[in-house]
Figure 1 (cartoon, rainbow, N blue to C red):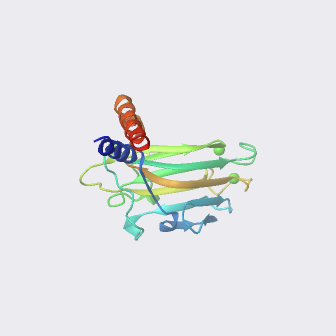
Figure 2: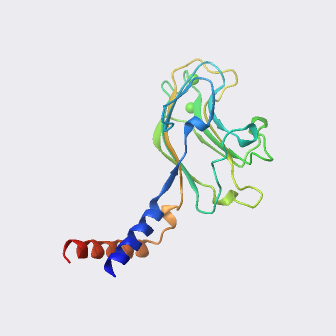
Figure 3: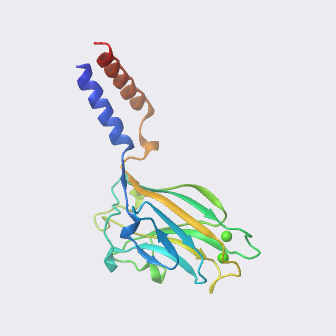
Length: 197
Ligand SMILES: [Ca+2]
Ligand SMILES: [Ca+2]
């Protein structure tokens, strides 16, 4: 019984924390963007154009992988570095999601857009739940290192690194804490029972 409960608890915890990795090799590259062989990391370097971009647009033939189920949370780790901000660089990391079936992001149409305008590292996290509908089962995604000045700015030394793009199946903030603690307790009891039968 304990063994069954511990397996059940571990499976539940696994489901609560599992994530679906997405492959940057499935994206279309525009500009000076280098993708690692395993698709887990991309490095953006300024090349003098308005933007350097990773684009996943199923309408243009890119894989349709970014689902918008109720608890799907889009996440990736990033490091945006903008030296000499304001004086020479006016850049930003820009993340855009769009309904690839009805919207053209190249014409300024999107569902949501996020801008990181200063040097910063962290984990980008956005729930796609608000955009889910029968008409929008999946979304397109753009990740840009973008000059905020048309035609580019004077500095060409801003960089962006993005890693570990993933869809978290469950938003951890929506997992009730008591039930998580309860599951952990059951798992510990079960494991203890295995060690000391
Ligand atoms: Ca710049
Ligand atoms: Ca900036």
